[in-house]
Amino acid sequence: MELCSSLAFKRRVFSGWRPGPARGCGGRTRGSGCTGPAPRRAALPRRRLDLRHSRFPERICQYIAKESSSLVVSVGYRLAPEHKYPAAYEDCLNATQHFLQHLEHYGVDPARVIVCGDSAGGNLAAAVSQTLAGRSDFPKLRAQILIYPGLQALDFNLPSYQQNRGVPLLFRERAAFFALLYIQGNTSNLEEVLEGSHIPPDLRLKYRKWVSPDNIPEKFKVKGYKPHKPCEFKPEVFEKVKRFSEPMLCPLLAEDTILQQLPESFILTCEYDVLRDDGLLYKKRLEDNGVRVTWCHLEDGFHGIINLFEYCGLSFPSGKRGLDKAVAFIKGLQKELSLIMLLPLMSLLRLPHLR
Image (cartoon, rainbow, N blue to C red; front, top):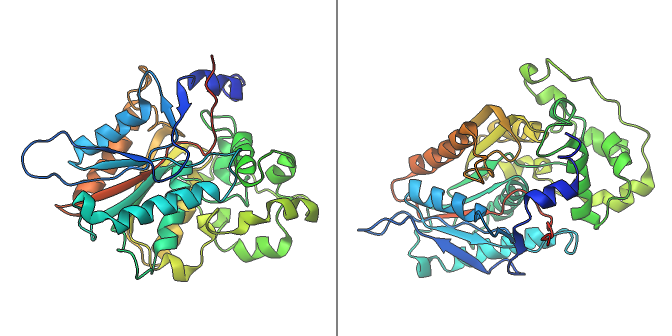
């Protein structure tokens, strides 16, 4: 467990990753490989790190494209810590808007566009969907697919954070570590953020109606959870991380008026994942605001299980089952689905290549 928590181990695992394009609109397309009439099409934004040997992102893109008869466009974005928030969000938004403005070039029906992402990509997909909600100058998204998304940074002591604090591939401390790198480029005040000292009482009270263990089904709080009392508020820490309260960084905090305009949604959560409760809380908020949600929960899943699909022999049946559920959701939306934007996978951070 301790070995898996170190960046050195992660960099060794992902030693084939190399930086890709520097901006968000430099994407690639993946066809379904079908012959005959033009297939349904999907577009995937590509994360900026390519696995040199296993071609890991490409395997997922190709699988989705083939199984859903879709065109997949993969778009890259700038990474932290070199490029802090909102760089990644802006790149993904710009890429999505670019495709929406040039759908004719891809032969895409404007009424059949999906945005999708997992982990940090799920955060970006949710933020992009919210930004485009209600916009009359762009086609309305048909759906959003969020795979174990990270959606808030107010509370790192929700039940899933306590229960799965030491479960690979994402540890509780690492989740806060990555969030801090994204927002400020360093990990100072990590302990204060973990203990909740970074949120003022009035703001915590304001968002308690949305970010609270009370909104999580009881069956997810049976084991390994104790109510947490935040430590004393530290204004100096809040000044450094106050953008954590922005919905474009933490989509779970968006107002009801925004959520009510969101498209049909697919949310995948894993039992053994610190981000499980982010997905559960967002599912409840969407449903409370009249948004249709298809929920897939992997009882034996962990964070990153989809990302390991056909990766160096580490593929898990549960991961494939979750991926197939997402494909089934895509296929069930419409017979002529045209475009999917799959926002990049796993992390907003650059994992340097180890020589």
